[in-house]
Image: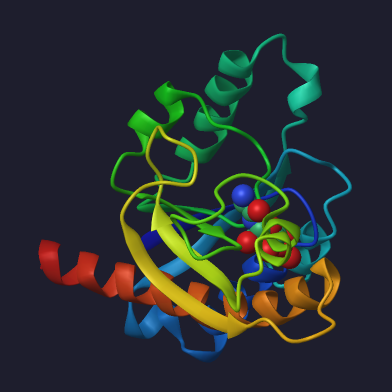
Length: 198
Ligand code: GAR
């Protein structure tokens, strides 16, 4: 069984979309894959409740309890590695990862970012797209490398920017597309992986 570990910090709606896709698409039977655990750096991440209701083990590691970024990442790696992960999925995990963490999961670590990368890496992507006068915005699923919001692009969705859009309305339109592309990208990654080791 291939193990997917999902990391969240907040509402976890992308994680929920992946869990629902795994249930509805019968990933366990069709892809021999499962969401093995959902981990959060915040105890109040709402997504944890959803995961528990869907029978997925959860754990919380509070980054504020660690003396350094390296110490937190080392503890996080130990927690993730208990699941023998084939794929680690960042889904609104709002932490900058150390190079050691990224290297440890090289080739099995993916992220979703709410912009059409390479445009607007970092924070406040929707306001920045509006301020720049963009006509289109979107989201990108990409492999994680040591450089923030870089790495090979695996999937993208484009949405129009409409007159009167605010960061909130644009964010909602992009997020609903994230929920489409992220589960598909995870399933595609898992099936490619299955073929390459078959
Ligand atoms: C999503 O829009 C995701 O793209 C973004 O955080 C939101 C999390 O929502 N990620 C980043 O900004 C990463 N740099 P969710 O918790 O409901 O999935």
